[in-house]
Length: 402
Ligand code: ADP
Image (cartoon, rainbow, N blue to C red; front, top):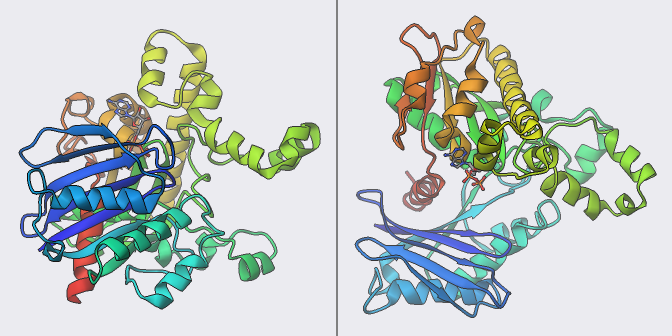
């Protein structure tokens, strides 16, 4: 069985074609800069060199057309007929409180998704365009939607509610939703497999640390709390996002700076100009920050310290929420690749039974591994995330009614 996973961002279409018997990737790629003159298509398939071309992709429909044509290409393609694709899995960033699990696309589901436009205006219209483009190009092939928010729908009300007047929850659906759910779900399942124990007997904290980062408390396979909120802005300090701040800073900025009367300017300030970027004045990229810290840059050090401290605080809080944990899992760009960040976060947590083996932690490896000491009560694990595979598995599960 072959499954195509599609991830339509605001100006890109990313895809992976899986052979599900082996769960291996057969072909993958990205159409970037959709709608712009500099649009390009980068793709690769098993046993072939990577190719990159400038392309004309005025919208998501044209981008999806390019992808399907390439997959069917006589010389370089990976399939001979579209019927070889059993189902298409779409990554959807925000399912609001409408979607608590993956669903097969039909008219009602599409109508429900349209109602989510206002809650994630950058992402959902792009996802929708991608779904329609796939329907057009792969007529008759079912599509399944897999939501980043779905895994978090098990949170209790006292964890997902904000203490503002209740009517804003009722009218505007303002509550914590949480994001990166597909990643937190994948790594918690892998952690259980690596520990050789059923997921429903484990307490795990998963730290997805990338450009955007979130920490999640998972008990018996169910999310109890997560650091991102109504939007992916809340929580720990991130690459260019501020994470938790005193909400009263917002009306203060509006009062003092006329340019912030426009809500969009404030959104840009908090989403694109804050975090590592805002504090260091240098970059939102952790690799640059780590190098600058080593070179003695004080503001880079402050930004680094703040990010690690904010993650440590969430881990400690969720340790209490879960009354202890079996495993702490690091994943995503920073979590998988930065021993310096992992070491700093785990330093001085021995009171919680979290003890890192700093030598193992520093060993370069792209593999799943345990980096805690033998006496550490909590297993510290590094697990490369695989959101695409998780989406493919979900799509298969929905298709086959497993
Ligand atoms: P996204 O949230 O966009 O999916 P990623 O999960 O790819 O992002 O993470 C990107 C982050 O990972 C960047 O801050 C990048 O600097 C960081 N990163 C990647 N490799 C390393 C590394 N070797 N050391 C430190 N940080 C790294």
